[in-house]
Image 1 (cartoon, helix red, strand yellow):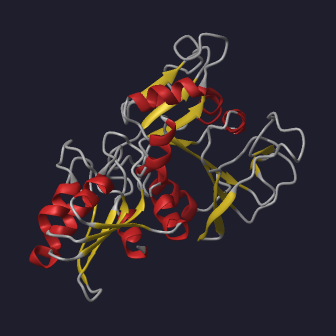
Image 2 (cartoon, one colour; image 1 turned 90 degrees about the vertical axis):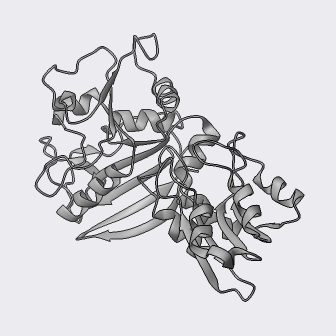
Length: 339
């Protein structure tokens, strides 16, 4: 299962709006005879790729998969039927499929006499984590939201004079562009547009746009985005969400924007907005994970990573779980999960 999770991770950034899935086929002696992962949306699923790699050795094998084999026909056929046709006799599953349309693979396999095993929660946890974007989006009916911030060691995103470029290192900025290449949507508030005039694009080391670009979303309640803003250039598609279209009141409703993005097939939002928007979305329980790129710099004054908010006591504080710690040059990246 550990290997299947590693394989699943290879599909990050290429399979959206579909899940990342990994599959390992073992013969009767426990030897690997085939491996596969879901490589791109619309392409063969992990089980099919593993079966192709195994060929005739798949007969009588055990399939170890990170997500319940699908049981429906979409752009590809049902993986449950592919496993049956190949003669697989045992299937080990980490996570049940929460999408009703595709669910039922376990029941179909068991009805055909296949031994299906669901792993323990401890073994399932890495499979949940690697596929967290699709699982949370499917369960909640809105995109998974990652809040990213580059901060000083004392939690500040700008100095007292407003300067913020660059707090973090070149290595951290390169890592962020890799992250941008793996999401399908980027979101900021109009305050960030007015203060920083960002492009919100995936760029190479020379600063040039590279590869498929995520949708850019600006939450702009009263339409203050300047016509000449970089975020409106032709490097990528942009949605300016106003209160008139999303909320009907004086302020744009982030939940309504997320619902519309999900309807449009968007599954992963990278929130790069300033402290005000991030705090508002945290207050509304709309942030699923937080990435903090922490630089070995101390300001002692300046704007904090979060600003305001409804939390008044320690009891009301939102608790997160530290899921990942990684060096980025002189900086440290911390990934916290709220679910």
